[in-house]
Image (cartoon, rainbow, N blue to C red; front, side):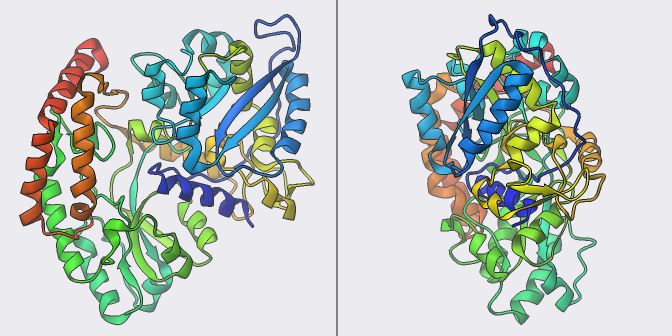
Length: 496
């Protein structure tokens, strides 16, 4: 099993959990650096750091952490215990751990996995400004500054984001076997309307293939940034007045929903799209023609390696830096950590030291992987016992490369990150405390209407006015007014 397949399988699991993060393994030369043994505010005794992270628990975690601990003891006089919690259980179990005061030092958090902003505001995480200044200087010089700036909550850092792809960019993805079979050209495909001739060709000639694959989480792309993911409040990307609007009332979304319904009626979309949890079975079988996904440099290689047949893509949006993209993978220090200074020293080392970062990602050299050259590695059979989600474990740009990765992979990531344009509301985080009742009601309406509208399953002429009315009755206008007041105050405070 290749490293690219390994990383993507976990990214796919997170995709199903509404975290659109794709990451691969990567590279860098071995140049270890770290703190002195007695640094970090302790008296020279070795401390053990407890690290909770997300992913299917791996058989060899303790074995690898034993090796990791030998290294970190030498570098920063600390050992590490990693506790993995499976994808579907993570949020609930971490809520219990925080509420019960379970001993924890480092905690994985994200926009869509044990909510970063919400838990920072609830006091689950330690404020890191001073710790970063004192024990995280190397880290601050290594990570793209946009990650640290964009992940601030109410002006403060509560976590260390993984240094990986920074913007979100949507692409149309295609099963290349079918493109080639019908000699279809994707060079001018960008808008939702532009893909219609291709879908028509596949529908007419490939009866066993789903032309436009999607699940219940699909939302047509429109050039807005959502105040809260997949609730109808959004700000236009080229806004000048920073007005929060109901996305269902915008001409762009109304046009997109009409097109989606047309596609659904034409049979381009699977009849059960609005209730489908995942399209992974379709991807495995190859019985799909196209879908929409979020990309990163060399993503086509990653998808092709994972599915076992060629996949190609073309942009469906610009590359935009949003709260969701910045907060896709974060490590926080628990508010009740006994050793916050040492935890920050560890995070500093993890994000700057290739030896430590690669050990935690790929396991033990000669057991789980072998080096092909100074940058590339190949997994060995034992890697099945240590198959980790790369994106969730720190600075990806220190990682070894997969066999099929070009030498300049991480340079391509840096260029991609530099190309991203900041959303107008980057680092604005809405606090819904004052409208909690309305938020619950709005969420309930969303569950009733959202998926069937977005996938084109129902006629927007009939159902859109009903949905808009139901959202109003649930108190959406009050929620939007509260969000607007907070956004105006955020701007007035000099954020824009």
